[in-house]
Image 1 (cartoon, rainbow, N blue to C red):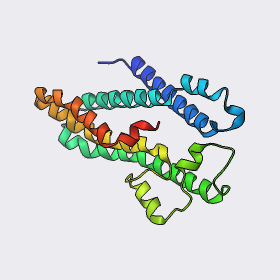
Image 2 (cartoon, one colour):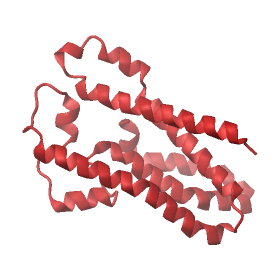
Image 3 (tube, one colour):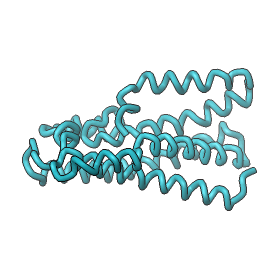
Length: 196
């Protein structure tokens, strides 16, 4: 079993990965600015958002797996509480970020903008309906705030992890199918792995 000290270090590493992703996104927002042309590519290389997202997902899966191992009740009875906690951990962030993006879009300057970047003009829509907002809040789409694809993947992964774990415990040979299943999932969502 992993020690509490090591668990805190893993949590800290997840925090570092989250900061790297935030810096990466900040950099790609200003990437098209003429004054940033010389130094932004080097910083994007150092603050590799795609690698940090991958690290964050791997560590999150590991931490969730530890919580499954430590549970004292059977998985069947523990799953509803586990799923509820995951939903309550993800949806507040989704809701707040969606509201902030809506406020930014409604109160911000008219696009297309010439100074920020292609990123802002490409990934933030100009005409938004209430259906767009609902679809984004249900994680059916992520076009209001493109980076919320990670919340969709985290939600799917965290809700499927206990099922995959239970199957691999009951049928150890089935664990060989888990990696291909995960690769198939990334193939089904090719847009989500192309944008960190």
